[in-house]
Length: 304
Image (tube, one colour):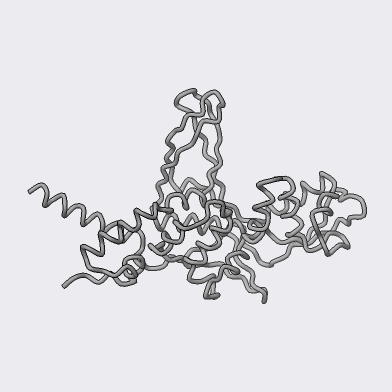
């Protein structure tokens, strides 16, 4: 009797969000549930446009792999866009751990312009600092201590940045990073003094002190996944701190050569006589375990 591949997923992983999601009724959802990546996700990633913003990739990937946010289900792309930036980073971190484990092997390049040599860096996901900041409400009120600027009041209401904000400023950020920050702050402010219609021009009118105070407030109220690695170049000895973008790195780990995915399907279908649908429904790690078994069996037969 041949084994049945079936859509047999590993038990889903429940995680506690470092921030949390506040829905339209004011209820806070502090937990989420992830399911393992499958071949269908790899197939989708393989067909992505190369210029698709990382924030948009994270939105779609999490929408595919989240089974619930608190009591909210199904999880749509719209809901994932409303998640806090720190929560999204944390979910990608946990999805990466579920897929490949805690060890990370990355390649960095020396920032010294006279060197630029690549170097291997290994670390554990346990080394990544997760700053928890549980939310209780969607909007926060604050009275600025700094003079805000001409015709601008000192009382503000703001919400924390979301994935939707990241997507909205992604293209702007490619051209002008400072402009992207102003647009993002404008999106997060519900009121600025008597003004309730905020755009980037009003943000540009803030005094430098008020601008920094608002930036600091957003940072201090938000959850964060801090990934900065200190490394020393083995070639020239330059010591540097390198930021590590977990979402982009994880996508690059998963994103397969489409031909390689087809080869996996071919080998498993030929060996077990499973359908393509069954094979692509397998969790990535489970598919790889079956492939290793086939390889080990083949090598054992060849050695006889």
